[in-house]
Image (cartoon, rainbow, N blue to C red):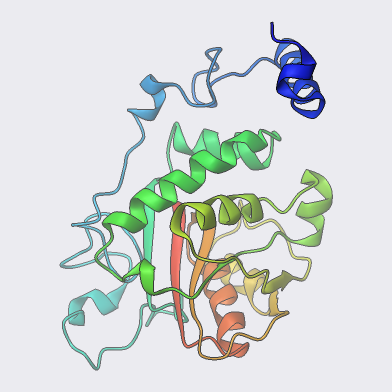
Length: 257
């Protein structure tokens, strides 16, 4: 073991602390609980990754590139005058959306372990997943984004978890893409979206997100963990438009399907 002087006292202390933490709380796979890694190769190979060539460019649903069962705008996707996604009300404020994988085991377990079980080391992995989807999407060009924004946690969720779960993911993604992060949004308290019906999610999310920064003329990449009905993502996009954003593109780690 190297002496503390040779590696620096600060680095030495960090290594010792990391070793102690690993001894007390050993790293385990979020999918199968196997020791040694945050998401083992076996579980990662079982993530249902959305093929961006076939995904809906409006709502990110798998296999919706021609006709999407989730959003009616896909039927007129080639019409330059067609409205943005969400003629049925969801995703109305977004120009396009892409998602990395289907919200099923083991991806859903990885997200749950990250934001509810406190395994914050998963943030860079979730950011890598987002970057992978963004690198393959045909819905928009992420390199044209001026800033990355993230859907903030509600005050209740922040108090319960102790952190704003999408901020570390957004900052890790910023490092991968070279696009700055803007902490542009805040959330009023609301009920947990999980367990609510589609109509309940839309009602619960309405007006819950507010802008806290001016973004005139900006093209914004808005990131979140899970897209179910799109209610939360759409309300966050609406807040960004109220702050002056010209375009808002959504990117989510997983898509309920």
